[in-house]
Length: 104
Image (cartoon, rainbow, N blue to C red):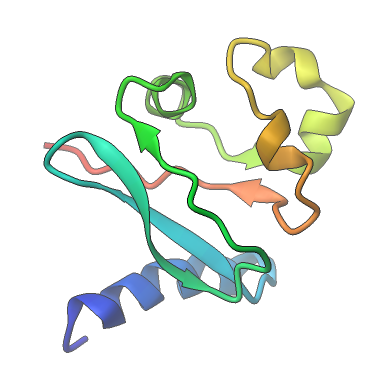
C-alpha cells in the first residue's frame, strides 16, 4: 500500500469481500474525539453522520465489541436497547456494522 487512501480502501474492501458486500464506510476519530466518515466505497447512501467519542453508539461499540447484524437487530432488538440503532437499521443498505478498534 502506497498511501492512507490505499489503506482506507483495503480496510473497507477486505471485510466486504469476506461477507460478499460491495461497499462500506470507514469512520475515523479525529484529535477532538469526533468520529467522521473518512472513506466510503459504494456506501449506497450519502451521510454526514458523525459521533462524539462520548456518544452512546460509540461507547456501545467500544464496550461490547460486537458485529451488529441487521437481521439480528430485527429479530432481537431488545439486546440493543441501550443504544439507538434505529437510524442505522432503517437504511436498507446497512446490514453489518463491524467495529475495528485500535488498541493502545
